[in-house]
Image (cartoon, rainbow, N blue to C red; front, side):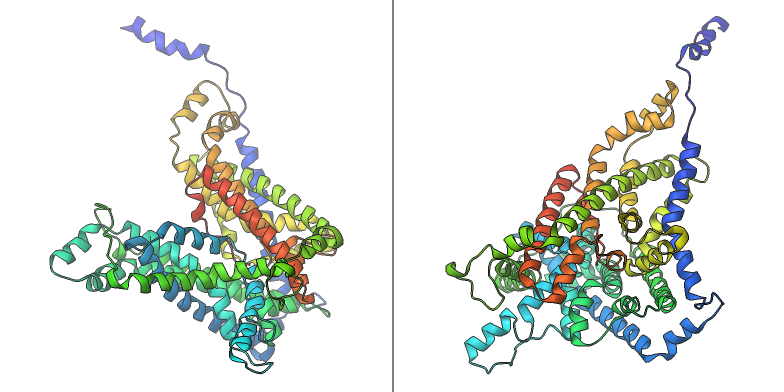
Length: 577
């Protein structure tokens, strides 16, 4: 027996020697990078809110939030507006999700694809499209109204420059959050409960009311909270629609505090309540989705019941057409028409078609080439660095490569609770300081984008690692490879599709970001999103439409590529800007 046992015991002597494992230094490097990205801006934000110009401790900035009506009113308006957006998004998305998931509605795949298009559209670009459509004087809808009815000049049917118009424009690009959660919830409902209801004689409406809706209620509430959060922290759409109407919401008010003379302490103080509200809403969403009382035991037992719409089919089709027409078809058509004519009011005829706006944007407008270059450089840099950091952090956390590696997961996901405008304030305060002066360079934007996109990249890579068994990595380690070599030669190739999908979506998030970007760019570091915003202030809608269509084209191409690599990639929720 002894001689038999001696063979396997002596065998490891011949294996390849282990190389030094560098994961310890890599862990500390990643922790330092993530701490700089997340903790440093928030620390400066808190510090600036608590000191005056002389550096002395003060609570005057927080007192002003309560006593100054010009600060109190934007908070109240933003809160009311966000709640209205949450309700409207739920009212739009819930029946749409039910029609697509549980009925014989014609063209259900097309409907899902168009909702995805609404996802990809930057909200600030959608707001500009609705400016083109519903401005009280020049809007296409109002021009058609005056032409058809013979109404006098100056009268209008709709006015986008109102609080109601703002709620509508934001809801057009937040309802997909509710739609996605409700549709996924409907797909997971076991059919046994609905079958039992039907067997007991309940009609479709009764089953829907007493069985289906209660089961998807958590998804509806969680989706509404996300819509409220997106509306509350959004900058682009309120800046485009609320400022011309003469009122501020909190994000535009924070931005205005950076105008001359800057009031940085007050801006920092105003950012902190927004940060706390964001954390509370995210916690509320997690609590709702995590409640055990809403779970169903037994899993999905069959194909979903498909309700026949019968005589209601065409009414359902009309509802879907109206929703998609208002959120996707009309805005895209308005941008395309404006890009191909010299002015908004000009009718679209063969003689009116022109490429003047395209020629102006790409050959005459000097800022375009620099903005395109800056956007491309930052998009590629952020996507590449962000994917590498997310890959390394997710590997360490999922494989517990180093003691305390869970800290990396906490740091990587923390920015999801930081609104873009709040992060922009923190990054500006940090890197405009003489000791860390990066303001006026692309580096400050790279830091901001890495922080903003890190949670999405990390979550996607973390999910991918949980789908791969570590046995192959263990075999590589037994043969003497270090963890870094194992990650590079074994694990990373297995994750190729997830890595590519993560890279694509980080790239899209970067090129469409506006909330933080608007505070951090200078004349030499402007991006396409900021150029679009600047052109909107000057009223050059033709050039805006060309740049907007280009941004959409790039986004859809990248989404297509990402979906080729990962079918789950389309479920990533983009950050509103």
